[in-house]
Length: 231
Image (tube, rainbow, N blue to C red; front, side, top):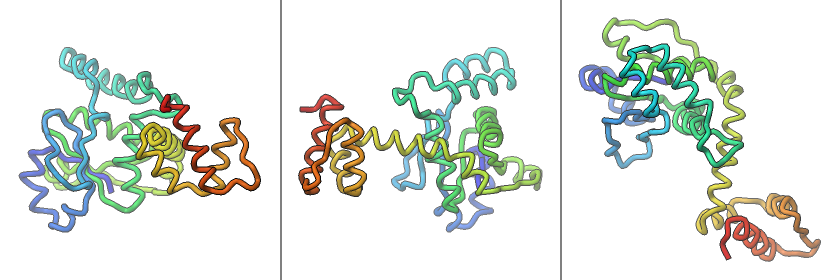
């Protein structure tokens, strides 16, 4: 399940109503300008990508219009103009990596913010529902009113909706690893010989029938270095 809660309700209610095991096995996603990630575990991440941009925050402060805030937030996520990877959207990558992927792996995910940032999280939760059919359980409402509306999670539908961003995130991760020495070595260790040959041939080079894997690795490494201006 995906939950949301602000820090005030977390302190007042969540630590009393959830068990120690529940709290420590959850994936926590901090989306806040005021909460720092002081944890040393990979179960807690701070996702600044999904926080509204300055223009959205300033416009909302000036107008108080949640309708305008929502439109600007959706536009921010869908119009990823500053991302160098044209095939990818780094906002979608953040959603997939921090929320969808853990959910599909049967982890509970909790989004946490400050009380005054709840309107921003409203926009994110609305986007998750509209784009990926993910209903988020509002623990602020549950602990205050004692109930929330009906929740329905169809993991097959969510996975289907997330196919494109999953592929794009994997491609961006691959391209990013090609840019560093450690990343290139990691890829060489993980890729099959067939995949390496395919990558070499995509660059326009040919692989001899008798070329051993060591020579293939050297050739592919050279191609990657040339692509990234490393000689």
